[in-house]
Image (cartoon, rainbow, N blue to C red):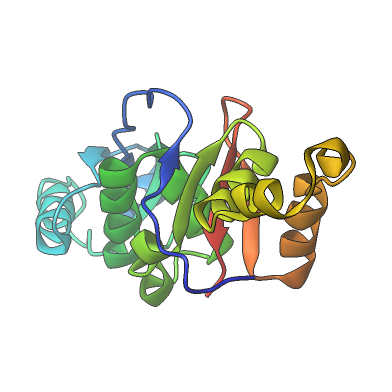
Amino acid sequence: MNEQNNFEPHHEQEQPPKPNPRIWVGSLADYNAGRLHGEWLDAAVDDSDLQTAVARILAASREPAAEEWAIFDYDDFAGYRVAEYDQLEDVAAVARGIKEHGAVFGAWAGIHDGNRDMLAQFEESYLGEYADPADWARELLDSDGLERALDEVIPESLRTYVQIHYDDFVEDARLSGDLHFEQAPNGNTWIVRVI
């Protein structure tokens, strides 16, 4: 693989609206007392804003000892699974990435279990969305002028017999572990470099 190729992520078609990740946070003291007390919160906010909102929920509880909270539900995290006791900072980081980059970031976060160091490397790792991974291979190899070089070197009468096997190139990239291919909800393929 040519690690030197750096080109802008490819977008196969117009992108759908970006998700708006949110979580339903509730007071555990209220839950244990037999009632639900909480609210839906926009998760794609600054860490401190999310923590302030949770503190407000706990302060409004009818239970005097409402100090603990949990994430009882979540929405629009693009396939990323939010757990009940995930750290708010981690949830907010994933949500902000999804809000900025779309559903592909949810897949990226899922691949890396929400690891914040890995989340920060998304932009340098995302290679784009393609209807067929072979299109990525064709774009990558054509950017090096490979097809043109073959046209120049191989006689026209033999050129139809000399082909680049783009599907095999994709399979080799997949097997090498250098790239991850993830199916997008629309049937296309997201391609990310594994770091």
